[in-house]
Image (cartoon, rainbow, N blue to C red):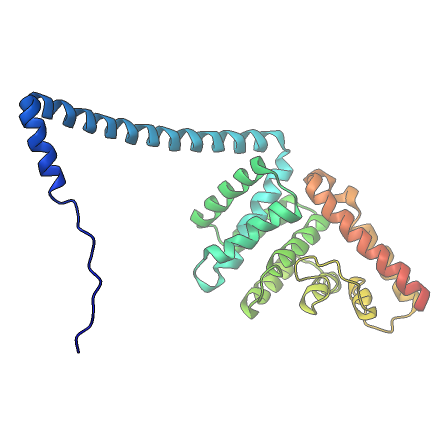
Length: 278
């Protein structure tokens, strides 16, 4: 079978030879060498300028990240550092960290914690450091436990679930690792259930949708089973509102105070709804 093949347009293989011959005819070898030298040094200058531009931009990024880091408290920086390292260890549960797994971490800081460009430069530096780090999850949790009280541990667990459930799917291995984290940090089963149930059951989880909640979801926010008594609802609300009060995590930074404020709004909404129906 004969197949028609489209002809390729003529190339310019002989153009360079023609140009060289013309230069030799018009100005001889000196003119040819001058032009070749100009082309060579122009190319070299362009390469150097590109290199300098890349180097200058990287220095600018590092300077912006360092400036932001120095403007924050040691407690804030330590909290974010450990949070990112723990999130990376969870992402490494299958042995490989892909760009698709790093995306939700960056998006969480950019959109939910409202980080600006300077803050995001710092976050990306921390992510790269975490990827290169050999520190084990146990070592990271030991460090976290020694630096932070119970309330910041609850915020950490809440943030871990928030990041995980921005993904379309959360693997059983990841959930098992979160359970390990909660156990290591000595978070009570009740408090863990109050946080986990919102996400695992599809309540608030899935990327902070802000949708209207069901009766069951209001109970889950307070860590209760449907049908709990008025006294149980009141007791759970008091306990959780004391633990999640924004003042208890204010030292971590304004963004984490906002996380606690959002948590308090959830608790208040759930309590106000359930006390009318209990």
